[in-house]
Length: 476
Image (tube, rainbow, N blue to C red; front, side, top):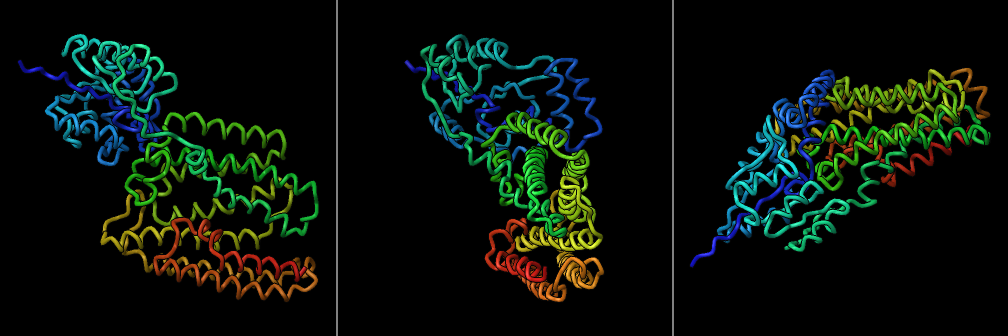
């Protein structure tokens, strides 16, 4: 007598996929249609199934780059090779589940949410029992919603369980296997918050240095507070940017390894953390520093949000926006410490940071050309054929910053601030060397995606920075 092995039923969100398609489609919708946020609210009034259908049909999700769990894939392949029937049963919308099943080519049947039914929890259990009978299937899942399904299954496969799920599943006594292939760590959060990028916020102290007030402890304290609060604001922006850029990041050779793009951190956790950071940043700014600092930080936040949603897709506008984001840090420092900004500092900042923004674009395009691509780069407004023009504009902008510095030396205010202003001339060849070297390395394909991060790690850049500061100290 031949015994028929019950089918293996596999959940999608959090099990086969290290993500959740409701959040995936929600973030994609927000990025592509930010002015139509009222529509999902209307869909939700008709029920969760209607919301899922609306988001699924409104977006074009590339299922080929989604973060699938390799251990679950291996389990499915092993059981399939034994002749077992494999079923995908998910609370995600049927249209997305069908695309995934066709992409992986591992499933014999797809059961999923439709416009009339959200296939989750007890509804999923009832449908599976209707198809295969009580105890007539094995089930792989991960969440509290899967508990009633496991109770009706022959065996339970617990995958990357949510908190408390494994204990509840084990209580029923039918757990066949526990798979743990994903766990978020402090390192993942450090990377997602991009704490190393806080070094950029050192620009907040530039007005303090220019005003020769470095020994003023009150201003130093205000600067330190501004540094931390601006860092919290920036980290909030980084999280939101990563959530909005999931698809583009997954098509990038290095960004696909970011915590959210790779699925090591869940989208839901990011949606909880980023508002907490922004609330903390603005609360601290309004309570502890002049209101002008909070206003400048709000400008930074809005410009960054605009950059993430739209501006970065437009040629020239994107790099000017990036240069402005650096310059705003200097303006924020002046606002926090109530110092006067000079024309020279703002002009120098715009030119030097425009050059670095163009370095960033050149590095991306250089990699695309190396791979033989000719089409417009994904999510940007440039073609690999634009490389020569970008290098010309970028190097010119860097040299313009040197010219601004040279003109600054003969300004009347400079003469009154420094005992030996002519010594500042030594800073010009240093900056010329650094700008030229940065662009030569970029031209040779040796530049990190972010030139600021590169400069922090590059010994020659650090040495030039020290000598640059020493020149101004001697001149003073």
